[in-house]
Image: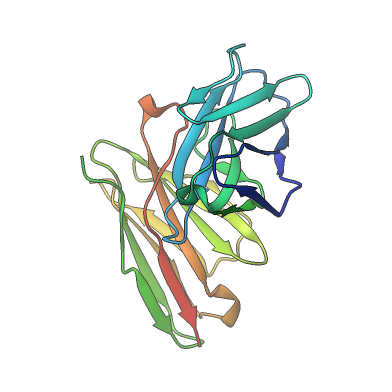
Length: 114
Length: 113
C-alpha cells in the first residue's frame, strides 16, 4: 500500500520569507505523479503544483516550486515570498498507478506572520 | 467550465438516520472519487466511480455506498448514521486527459447529533 508522510504538523513563516514543507512517500511504481494541494479555511482543495516522476526537472509554478528526489522518495514544497493568502493546510498526495485514488499525507498547517 | 459542485454544503442529521450527498463533476469528466476528512483520520478515500462502475473502494463499512449515473453525476449514501460519521465529505472529478489530476468540490459538511 502506498503511504505518504508529512512530518511537520505545523509551520510558520514571516511574510515575504521562504518556507519548505516536507513530504516523503512510498511506492514501487516507476512512473507516477505527485501533487501538493492547498486547503484554505474555505475547505476547498486547490491544486498547488504537480510533478511527473519521469521528469528530471523540478516543477515550478510562480512562487511555488518542488524539490523532487526520486531515489529518496522525497517531494518537498518551497514557497517563496510568502504571502498572507498562503496560510492554509497543505497536503501532499500520491495517486495509485492507473487510478484516480489519491493517498494524502496528514497535512501541514502553514501560518504566515505579518 | 463550471467546477465540481457538491450539494448540500451543510447538513445536520440525527444518529440512526441516513443521508445522501450529491456531486456533479466537471463537464466531460467521467471519474468521480469521494473522500472523508476528519481531524483525527485526515483525508481518507471512500470510493471511485468511472462510467457508472465502482473501480475502487476504501476501507469503510458497508453503511457507506455510492453510485454514478450516466451523466457522471454521483451520489454517496450513508445509512444508520453514527456520531463518528461527522466529517467533511469531498468529491473530486478527473478525466482521462488530466493525468490523475483531481479537481475538488467545496465539500459537504455533515454533522451527526
